[in-house]
Structure formats: C-alpha cells, structure tokens
Image (cartoon, rainbow, N blue to C red; front, side, top):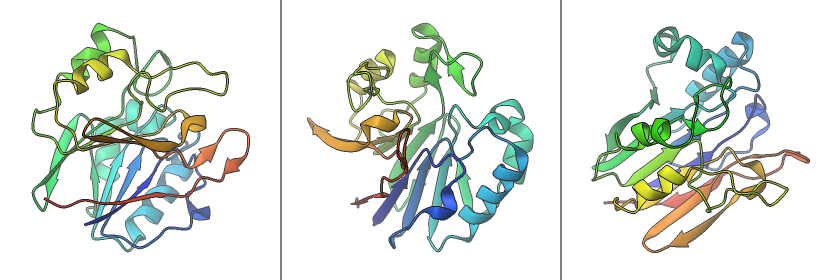
Length: 209
C-alpha cells in the first residue's frame, strides 16, 4: 500500500500538492491557532481527498481538538479516522496515534516530561507496525534551528521495547526528513519550515504485510 504523510500544515493545507496513494496520514498541527473556521475548512478538505483511507492525529496547535474533544470527535467526517491514544488496523497493518508532546504546557496536548509523558507511551500495544506521534522521540529528527533536541525521552525509551516498522511525526519543523535506525524508519513529515513557509513536500512510502 502507498502511504502519503503530511504534518504541520498550520492552516495552509490547500496549498499542498499531494501525490496519489492509498492512505494519507496527517501527524498533527492541521490548524494554526485552532479557530473553528480553520478547523472546518481543514476537515472539509481532508474529507474530500481521493484516498481510500485518511488518518489524523492532532498537535499542539489544535486547541479545539484538545479543549472540546467530545465535540471534535462528533464533527469528524466518517471517512476520517482520528487517533487519540488509540489505534486502527488497515489490511492487517496495525497503526497507533497520539497527539501529546512534552513541555508545551498551556498548548494543546502539552504534558510535563517524565511520568506524564510515559503514561501515554505505555498505552502503545506491543504489536504496532506504524506509530504516529506529534512529537519526535528524543535525539531523532528533533533539533530546532538552534540545534537543541526537544523530542521526548520517554518515547525513546518505549520504542526500545517495540518493533515499530515506521514511526511518523512532525512538530519540529526544522528537522524534516527521514532516517533508518535499526529496523525502524523514522519520518519527520513537517510541511512547514518556520522561516520559509510551506516548502517541504509530502513524504511517500510503500508498506504491506
């Protein structure tokens, strides 16, 4: 199956040029500051895309999803699978998604490092094939323009006990790209570059079981 990965579109989703594929994944920050007009426009756009499956998680800019979680889940179109510390399976491919990220207290889904973050990662089942988180793991495609790593240490620890094939995330715009460590492909799909705008193309990969 052909996967298309986008993330951190920050309200500029309609400017994207999307390649064809079977499954599209958005790894959070689909809104800029979470106003309802921007939210509904994104959901309309995402629902209309010509993919067989559409998967979505939220990020630290998606305030409506965090503050009105029940209402948000009610307005998501049926054709979109929203993951919030939850999973889905497509053609026997097991996928898990979580929106939380460390430190950004006061932002959507922001948690304190350590125990608060660990709680969410402990929910990830052992047999997940594709993991979608908004935050990167610590030390992997997580450096800001100042060279500081801001990914999650607890996520890095949890990944050592999992056999994830592909880990998708965003959040740190300056670290767009992908790398392979061990048997896992790590993919930062941030479409936004903080200083240059929406310049990074969607990521594409093939995966079957």
